[in-house]
Image (cartoon, rainbow, N blue to C red; front, side, top):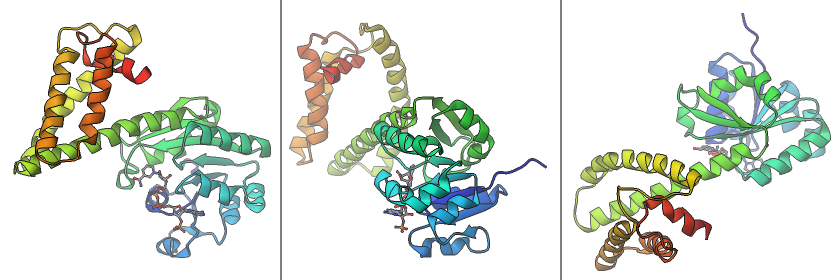
Length: 290
Ligand code: NAP
């Protein structure tokens, strides 16, 4: 029988509780702690419920942190008793933050002899433990490899994305920006349909049809951003700009919020000013960098 590491989970919010459930299901000895004891109640009988975060840290060589933000994490872990309990062990920070937060956490841990990985989960809690669930880690590769089989319990698409400790958070922020931007835009699209009495079912069904176009554009952008050559034969920025102007006008005519299409239009117009009217859409990157 292969050895399964003991795992402690600090933070039993929606995500932390899902992480704890995944380890319990996978047969690990799990210790949990949450600031408000109510969230730990469902774990009695399935996990060791610690009375304090220092007790949680001292029960396992590997502690996973899942708190609202780094401020909360610092409040818990920089307390002397908790820091002392974490010494000589591994902390895996799954609280979302910036690359700078990750660097600050790693510097603190290194000063105390604590091994430290920073990770990001690109999924909702109900997908934890799934074959395709992506979780990124950055930090020392050998440390990641030492715990890889334990970390893989949380998602089949677990990967190490770089030794620089901020790499996972940087990728997370970049991908989440794409997610939030796209979400805001499709919700605005839904508002357009509602204002024209187009059934929302029809919109969401057709929305699936545009997803491959986003993927094709991302692939095209990858090549163009790396070569700096935005010439192509698909659609000029002049034509794309016309399309966005229609969306701004429609939003105005139907009394909808125009901030999203107007913001998009401002970037496209700037790219036109920079001389990219005949180039492909990826040339808007130049307006972002401007
Ligand atoms: P959540 O349900 O709001 O839980 C927040 C947790 O942080 C709770 O356990 C809360 O404890 C604890 N907490 C907050 N401030 C604290 C403090 N000062 N001291 C001690 N504990 C404190 O949030 P979540 O959805 O689980 O998210 C946790 C982390 O996972 C976040 O960094 C989030 O960005 C990341 N994440 C979440 C998702 C998602 O879909 N939910 C996806 C990817 C990543 P109390 O119960 O005592 O308030």
